[in-house]
Image (cartoon, one colour):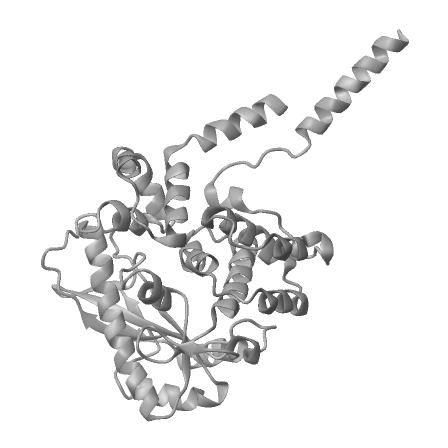
Length: 373
């Protein structure tokens, strides 16, 4: 049995997509140009791994490092440019109404770390507002063409959500039902042949015009058990140009732990969250005392230890050893300890951990038997 487990693992780690995925994720940490040899190797095997990278939401990393003018990347960038312009408009409207808000994940990461290049098709824009501002937020968005609606592919239009459904969802969650508004996109110079039918969101066809269904996900909380003040402490201006964002320390502990939980409980297989987090791990702006305090307060040791260890290995050991020692799941409750979870994310079967121990035990037993015979 142990031989079979080992051979399967070896075959998995020789698979082109996994090697490419790790190479590209490591690039995220410092975003320096890849050497010519690595670029040639990635381009040579791109046909093998690009479909999987698309599935894992990492294909933009290949384009950004090896083919920055690829048609698909130009599409991603055009969609993000429309979303960003809409966000700037909404941010100005919120500012005039005195509504404070915080941006995070894709919008903030693309602007701050990736020179405003998109990391794939962004389905939505995440923002956090104060609960007391929700009524004003709704008024502003409804007054400027946004609707709590879904795009009906068959009818090629936005269809409003039922008000009772909206009330039910919003009464049980820490975010509003998404707001959407259609905006036209210029398709000149783009290759749309590879796009699936129906179109992937946020793309939508209305008549002969390709549109972007710009979606705003408005949160008034970040998790059911996280106090907002713990997130907004030491907030900083957003690099998008409107609103604010969380400090690197708070971004890191919150979204690493959330990602770990989503993989365990919701079957998340996307690797894009690592693209958001790796630059933070590598930048050196994290106050590790803040991370450790949050880990203790919310029992996050396991949900931070595994993924921070993984990201540190890709970023050159930027997470201090003493921090990882303190975050060890052995130091607290293991109720939310689901192990490394890298097998789930990278599609391989993790090795049986006791192979060597069992082989040693068998050897010792055999030797003991020989001595007594």
